[in-house]
Image (tube, rainbow, N blue to C red; front, side, top):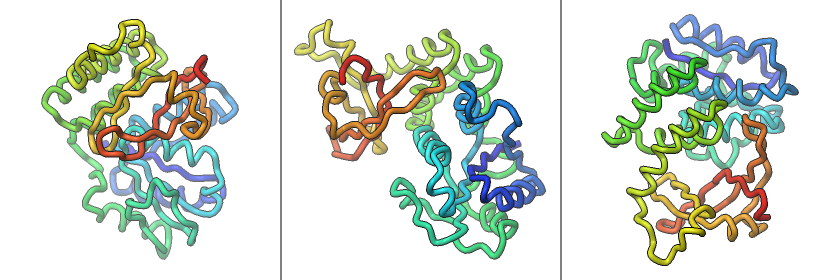
Length: 276
């Protein structure tokens, strides 16, 4: 069954519960946060990331309270990083973040129960019994068993060779290569990314082998891959937005960069340790 992640703050819990009940009555599975771990636990970020990863879509309950909440912001950024479909339900006139300006929200619902009917009527909202193999892939990539996550990597690599869901799969590999708790999974995902990088960018005769460890590639929303030197982009203060903690409790810097081909703005999470 199709899993939906509802992102909300405690002030909007009543609406979120109505949305849960409405979606579940239609055959959806709605992820429910357990009592443990709590947000102060070191394992909490990984639990949330896994829940969003395994979901077919993120349903955002948006309000003035949500706009001030750090975890709501993290939910949005993480879901967008994975190219997840986001569906905002607006409870008041608070503007959505700039990164969601292209998203069509459910506005001024008579009730949060009525919002469910509006959501499932949307053409791109996943069906409750979806047979989309990519939605199943998300669930497998977040599976608690290592063997299942390895199978997910193999399936995703096959989809990549067939040029299916290319942007989403590359985003999935980038996440698994950096954040999976098991080294074997990280290495397996990185192997696929390295192979794609070699295909997309043949070795430059002007790049010394000793410099290659400083280089990293980022894909813009138009599918172009740009390559950057950590020694340059990490030291430029105008590039850095904030420091974040990964699920492995490793500090990453969020950088604002530009695609070298189309000029599109790119947001990349990079380990800039030692280059600031």
